[in-house]
Image (cartoon, rainbow, N blue to C red; front, side, top):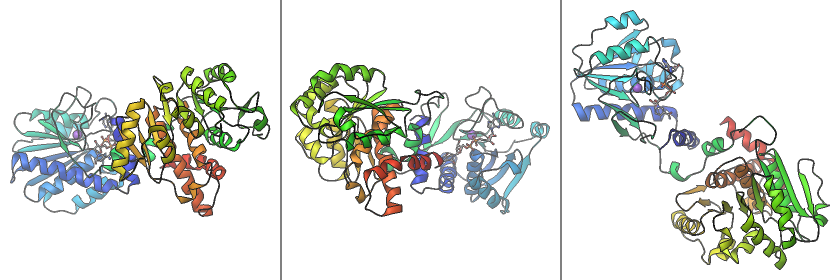
Length: 480
Ligand SMILES: NC(=O)C1=CN([C@@H]2O[C@H](COP(=O)(O)OP(=O)(O)OC[C@H]3O[C@@H](n4cnc5c(N)ncnc54)[C@H](O)[C@@H]3O)[C@@H](O)[C@H]2O)[C@@H](O)CC1
Ligand SMILES: [K+]
């Protein structure tokens, strides 16, 4: 596990209603349990807490251990600096107890004189994952003091040895770290305590994923993504328009390439229209579209493109020769279904609903979420790209792992919401996200925008309303 994953999962856990209070309680309880399992009971224990949440975990450890041990809590720093609600809450509880001794240490000189002989266990909850740079006073003196007793008392660190990764750190016998071993934690012994994160975190897409995917990449126009949308035909112009409109809220530039006749019906200053000669796309256009794709970071191909033979040929030829990440949707998928080998070596997302999935792979994803996910994963592995299977729960896989999304509502069966989705996924690719994340977050945002529209209008709305809600959905995510 990387710290980046944990950052995402923390946000998603909050979204699932798991509170920081619960996590802190479980963290502290996990450390206390580990200590009693290893060293027994009836011990004399010193807990050193800082004023951050690592220290908050320490307050909980002290309370749990106080039941059958003799505990002294040393707060290193100013009580007024205990900021988070949950740490403060646990501090107040501790202050109300008679059987836990509390000493507040603000002065480094005083810490240097401290005598810890007689303590069997020292718990180090001074600094955790929020550490910035080398430890400063008075924490630094407390670290030195604890280290004087290395070998004499057992030293147990909460999450990580305080000071880590700097060389000035607690010489812990081991650290109790939470739920996952992190790749970044090296050079000290670790015991993992689970703190109540559910399995959903591995699979469910949430605001954490979205927040991560939507971070701005640069200050200048064009640095935050350029997308090319290829779609439309003599029969359709709405679909590529919806895809482009939705995308335009996420990226700096959207080029919309469509046949000139339907293109005449569109006037939208947010899009850069690129009319193509003729009624439909045909192989004659491949060269022109490839040079447009050169200027973009990603491509969406398929919305409203139609099923004329020459158009299907165009789609396959374009995909074969395009080196940019691509989203293939709608009629574009049907063109691809006739020759899956065009996907070889490409970076892409396919966005089929169940029917299109059947046309692509001759198998219908059926049964439970797990059963469907298994089929999607298998097929994604076979084609060597990402598949986003649209449904009440969207299922997304890159062939190795899978995700699911449950934002969205019945109102979204209205025509065009799939085009909005394709545009969002394309935009997220253009922002530089890997295809699995682009597809997952696209599904999440599309559903979230739909849920926001539903809240205002009920279940009877149109896809354009969903597209126009995208900035609100993004704002909600960024403020979550
Ligand atoms: N979901 C979560 O995020 C969970 C976090 N938990 C605990 O929360 C910890 C992270 O808490 P915080 O983000 O509050 O961070 P920390 O408790 O690691 O430290 C932050 C505090 O230390 C100070 N500080 C930072 N660098 C310093 C330095 N070099 N010298 C002196 N002081 C310094 C900061 O001003 C701040 O007051 C984790 O390590 C873990 O113990 C657990 O409660 C479990 C759940
Ligand atoms: K620590």
